[in-house]
Image (cartoon, rainbow, N blue to C red; front, top):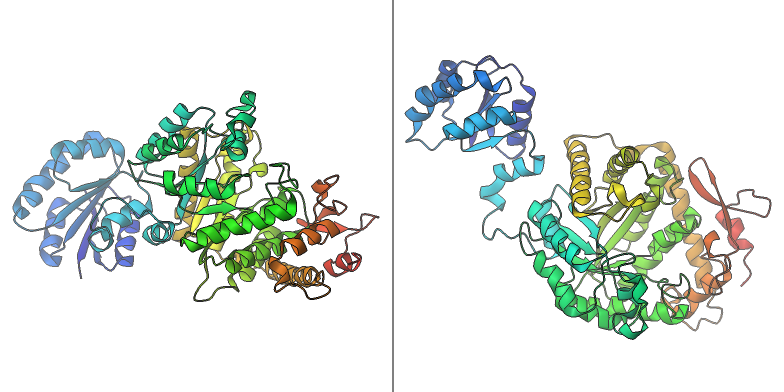
Length: 543
């Protein structure tokens, strides 16, 4: 067992930093000793002789003007005398003190407080897990395992010009904070990549980066081949979606597929595909990726919540999406949990809703189907004021950590004002990482709250009622499995079993449901704006 000796040297009595470091050492199997605060160099030398440590960690957090004589004494009395012994010397200090230490060259490692817990743990465990290639795993399952106990960090990025996006990706990659860069293409790319003659050139760059060829995609991937080599991924297109899947696999080694079940068609005007046809095509994309052992994320549940569907419909849609992915042969499912959507949702009810989704989705687990939890902040929850939005990012991240996510999708605090630039993303990820570190250091378990537990069970029951109502649409038992039938799912939307207030006037939907917020939860209401139970709501829908 390796041994670590720690001390605050000179007249320094600030022990918090060194004790936190020693606690991390204990966590990773080191035997630790603390020589105390205001430790003289002579006393430090005596302790080194007594304990024979592998690492000597000293801390000094006073003024840099007074540290040079102390460091020279350390060098003369300790470091030079132990040069034939394999002892690593570590300094923990402020940045100005660190500069003095660097000039002397007596420390193997210097920490200034800017490092994350992850970076410090990486130093402590490097001989155990950081061997071999310096390039982190280039698949999402491996990357998640590599980052534990921290989640892999993802962010969406796509500026209005290709050149700016390339430069931004290179900057983000060199910074080393992101594990996954999600390309945000403009609408012309998503809808008309294979039919450029249909593009409205006045809309180039609207909503993301204009990508007009496979070489454009490759240029983005090439820009990411530096720094910490982040994974790259991109949403599926809204037309010719199998061909787009092939392009993404070839050009950016798409880390996982992201495709909806019921969207990107006449339902949301993202393309002119008919709803039933789009569902079938989206299922075919899931199957295509499954056949190639590529993970799949189905963007479904939050689309209903973005349109203010009741919480019960959102939970049911989450299960339905995961179920379809499993039935299409997907083995690794990326389950996305978008918090703060709608933004009026309280933290208590939001956590309950997400836990209901988690339990229903993960009830599908077996030897051929597993999930990775991915959380994110809802875009519409950000206020335009930057200071307030930073608070929203931090507080939402803490709530998300209650799910112990495998992937945390950071959404930059600036998104209510403008699409994130590289520098916005770096700043936002730093905010989120600090929250993650604090959570991992120790946080109360909000999942045990009685209101959360009660609402979670209520939503699971409601989702079960919705699934049974959908199955009842197959009156003559013609479907092998109604829950994966494009025809049945289309009927579920048109009859209002799956419905949202913002679908009013959409021909492919029912759009008659009304909802209201009560104590932070989104509930369906009757014609008098009185909340109704899910059983009552479904009972009013005639099949």
